[in-house]
Each structure stands twice: as C-alpha cells, then as structure tokens.
View 1 (spheres, rainbow, N blue to C red):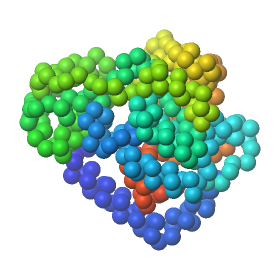
View 2 (view 1 turned 120 degrees about the vertical axis):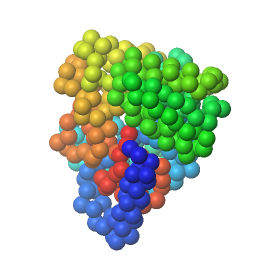
View 3 (view 1 turned 90 degrees about the horizontal axis):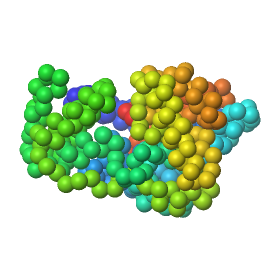
Length: 340
C-alpha cells in the first residue's frame, strides 16, 4: 500500500472510530455484542522505534499498560483454553469476554508484557516459533527491518525479478515506508526467492552488526511454565505458510513444534496459531492434522469475534492496535483496521 493512501485510510478510520465512540454507538454495540467474545492478538510489546522488530508488530509498552488497565475495569479476561471449553460444551458465555494471545514469542513478552499481565492477573497464551527458541533471532520480517534501520546507506537499488527498484532511506519515515513496501513484496514469495532477495539487500546496503536476541529462548519458557496464567501453544517450527506446503512439511512443522513445547513445559500442548493466519493459509488438510493430534483449538488472523457456533480450529481474532483510546475500544466491537 502506498504511504499516502495508507495515511488517508488511517485518518478516515480514526475519524470514524471517534464518531462511533463519541456518539454513544460504542456503548450500544457493546451491549448488543456482549455475548460475542473477542480474541485479541499481539506480537511485540516494545518501544515503537525498536530497530530490529517489524514496525507494525509493535505495541508500545505505555499503550499496552493502558489497554490492560482499561480491560481490567471494563472486560472479563479469560484464557483461550477456557473460552474453547465454553464453546465446546455449549455453556453460557460470560458477557464482555476478551482473550489475550501473543504470536511469535518475542522476548519482550517475557520482559515487558508478562510483568503487566501478572499485575492484573490476566491469563494469556504465547505461541513461540520453536526453531527460534535456539537462536533468539527474529523472523525474516525482523531481519529486513534490522538491515534497513541499521545501515549507514542513504539509499539503495534492488533488482526484484527483473524489476529495478530504488529506495531512499535517509529519514526514519522513508525507512519505515521501505520496510513496509519490501515486506509486502517478500510476503508473496516462496522461501527460496525470499532468501535470495534478502541476500541482495544485504549486498546493496553494506555490512550491519549482527542480530541481538529478540525472541524468547528455552530458559524463558522454563521460567514461565509454572505460572498458571501463562499457556503455550504451537506456531509451527519455522513459521511456514501452511497453505503452500505439502502434507509432509505441514505435519513436521506442526508436530515438531508441539513436541518441542511439551518437552520443555512438561504439559500437553493442544492450542495452535496459524502462521500468517488468513483464509488462504488454512487448509482442510492442516485442520485434519490438528484434529488427529489432539489440538483443541486453533486461532487465525481472520478478523472478527467468536460465538458458540465458531469452528474451534478456525477461531477469528482481532489484531491489537498501538493505541489505548477510542480506536482500541472500537476494535473490541469489531471495527478494526486489521493489517497482521
């Protein structure tokens, strides 16, 4: 999406949210949807200018604190396992229920989010990428972000499948726009082509310092495993797009992730989060693998609330936004500007 168009959409979204909240519509819709639970999902809780995490994955620590404070006063927070049990058993859904989930296993879940969750006694589910638990490195989106943010170059050229592209990165705004544009291109590539382009970027912008730890490791999981507030779910071993791989790869990614988590936590891992998580990334074959291997529920990034008729292996979620005012509140009634 072009930066100008993105800015226009965000302005219109903000104005609409303000009208919904200020007019009283928010309260009316909240009442009408009080029995429609919302599963929120987060990625990173960090400083917005963090140089090595994809910018649209970050919620500031300050805003996260404010969100949790508001939720503690206005919503009923339950675990993902509890809401799955409610749907499975067709029991009464508590009004204004919200579930908290965190994808990818960023280290700041442990260092920033967890202390805040513990303060409010909020249950949460963390979905780490098990292959990254060994290295502490991030996903390719984070590597891309780090390369662009940390280079001393002011611009660079890139050949993307015969398309000659030129990027100006002399300002922070230009860097963010470049990261977003490249991310949208690389998202649609297979792993081989994506690695090739990232290597081209490395050559084009020059040497940068190595990655620091940005995801949790086995030590953090061991430290968290005995807290009843925290549940771990599988998110594949390598964060692959399950909609594009064959059965054998999908099976390995899911089962290996499950077994690795069970080994360190000494508890059954029966929750799953689809990488990317859009409709096209979810297949009936994948859902059968989950069902055959005792997974009780799986979450997507398809926007929306859930109810007692929801497919437990295709639960919708709302992406948390970097704000704590009327935009965040409107997202809880389903009016969300979803990017993740």
